[in-house]
Image: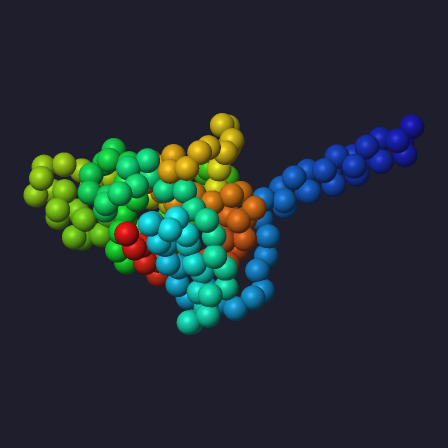
Length: 165
């Protein structure tokens, strides 16, 4: 009886460890120095120096054309930002925060008497809903969960991200 209980506890422990570790991976490749997002092509390139390490297809904000200016406009920002935070408990699998809004974004919105918005991320798919069609985010950059798991491991805070029209 005791061995059955011990085997059950061991199996339960292994299942818990597997479930916890499956969301995260390690990356031992070249340092990621820059990300480039091309909104028109719906692609994101991951660089180490001048070398492209990976290219991903992306989904963008539902208001995909133009630079994000105000909260709720559904647009993905354009310009130079940095990865400034990580969220392992995101509602969208995993996420990397983008430093939008910058000083110019805040000043433009303030001049119009509106909020620039915020909480722009690179993230995976929604945890509760599943994959969606093209350009479904509220201004974020979305990839598959498998791709997000690798990006989360590869990209460090402080990495530059250039977002082009």
